[in-house]
Length: 293
Image (cartoon, rainbow, N blue to C red; front, side, top):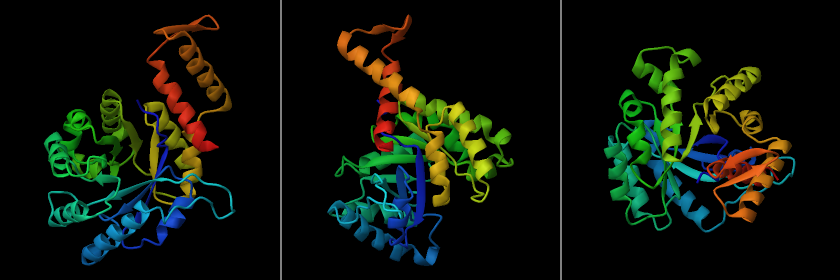
């Protein structure tokens, strides 16, 4: 069941661990330390060990941030480490560092995944750490072709992230809505079929708030449950677009209560027949509502 709110995701460079606090204060549901694109090749080894130390500290509960710049309470985000592709020397070194860590990250983001076998390899190698979840970026032509199998390749896979920029280059098209509509739809369908979360590619112009809102609403209508961001100022807009209204929250509470009271596969509310699969959506709404508090 999808019940963890993953409306928004914000990256920060893996060689600048001090930026985690600022990223966490932005209100994103997920915050990802990036060892891949955000770190220059010459700095990757240093960043790798900085992040191992950072996540070890986080595992001991010493880096939680619970207030924004105005002093308002902010729920602690889900921390993730984006490593380099396992098909590269840097990616192999990243994975070895995770395996050697006494307190490894609780989740890894995997870039440029091309096949379900790649996920199975991660699954096998991470066997000593069964708690580690995987967030998979679909950003290659091969990955898009195999995304249905990728989504089901391991119980560790918690979400798919649509990587539109790299995918557009692979598909030889412009990274606009029309050109990427098929890719977006395919990733949404793969995630829905596997019962996992799915997030859209970031909107790259962080000064264009109107454009961000238009694209985020379009992503929501297509079936995405969240969207990545390139700047903290994008998070409030993304969270608002993917958050339920008070009326939707009240309806979810009624539906969940009705099923709990009757214990059957269907209930009738206001003359409308509601089947049990709808509970997945209702529980997700209530989980997001709890985070909104």
